[in-house]
Image: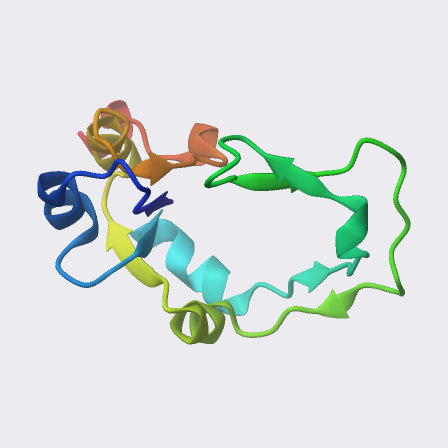
Length: 126
């Protein structure tokens, strides 16, 4: 994931996010079908139980410092592609997530990488 933050330069905005995107999620082609067919469930919690984590002006997560309990049973999240569109998040496909990641971490955009251990290595591409 990559997104614009207050210190993102115009050059990095254009190079990483493009002319209009505020936030981009990138997956490898091999994960697209799994994303389209995943049945994901989420729990809902009281927002007051969580506080921002990271830069106070632009937190990248919210954490609880005490045990929390869900408001109810897990609920289906729905179609992940449609949810990206509804949220205005651009979804991109790439052959190698690690190549994209190596570029992103050296820029001024905000970023987060989850499950990078599942990305195709350069060895897999040859």
